Length: 194
Image (cartoon, rainbow, N blue to C red):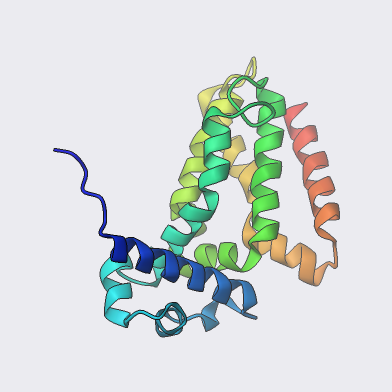
């Protein structure tokens, strides 16, 4: 049975909700400030529409993150080097971590909202599972790396690009986004080079 396409008004409402949520998270001082009621008002839809489509705040955050990450995911799955599958594993692992870090730097409030408030644990977020699986697979292609070592290293390396750490480095340590990227890249290189 073919998948039903959403009605035009439902698709329009979903886009309005995601755009409104994106804008509110980008402008907020704290992710906790953004309520479902505020999103519904900003999107010009009823709260019932919002809850029917996304279930709760966590569902909204997951949908918004998935929409924002889709271009990056596509690059990783089928793109050209350095992110695409034809890239040597060490180079690809470093490029993937830099791309995820770049995304989190550009989307700090949204990333924080999902990691801190959305899923209950940053390790349960769908995007974390996606990046962990991808990075583990890449690392396992490095000669001498076992599946267990690769899985652990993926967790450890992804910890360097967690939204709360990125936020701490920028707001508390005073690092610029470029400095954060340089330091993470240096650390990743040392880990991958053994």
